Length: 302
Image (tube, rainbow, N blue to C red; front, side):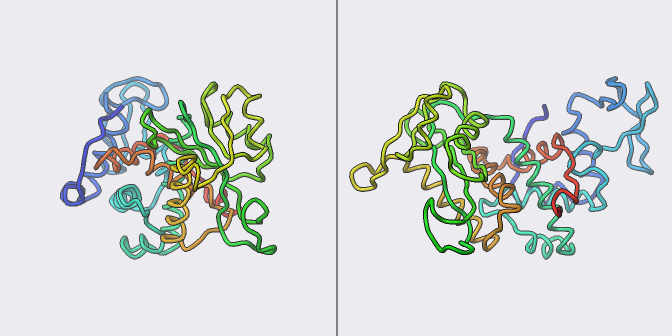
């Protein structure tokens, strides 16, 4: 895998000034050990068909685009604008809205919106490769404005989100997972845990009965009522992360409906999980976009 380099804003601006430089960097990130033909798998220096921006395999003659098979496949947006979008979305913990990108990159709003979702999709795809392990805090949260009953907590009709957060030996947060769910029933909670948490891990929750099923599914469950006065440390970090996620969505996107909420939560978790990789966010996001499948526009609008 390609080495993720560090890059400040000024370094990024100085390095990526035209399409050719962007294409060369994308090539090196995609094939760090030399060109590998997507068709025959042979590793060899290809012919550079510069007039079409393609690379031709010397063994089978297949012509490959550096963006084929990636989130950028068949894009009409210049690579330079893609690179800027990745840089802006991955480096600012507040994210970057489609409206802001459309202004900064001189794109129409619909193009910027689709571009953002494709990058977001790659971020989420990258994090599906990992599960939480060790000591986990788990709880449910509710996002968005209530639509009818006006209730709060588990009786609300806001969007239900299940959240898991791993802690290290010192009790500090490490990695987070968030998933939009249909309800907070036991089987739904169990499904979230089995998909996102390593078997045998210890899961701490509040005293809600639905979480008791975790002890039947191969996890060590520690459930007790949350009392911020007598037990302020219980689920403290988890609730902090949930508050940060809500502030991110409210501050940058001014609230979201349930349809696309999952991808925005994945964007939040992606940045949070890589918060210690200072100045490496661009290359890591570019790698995520290289290895993630293309997101069809129809999937966003149906």
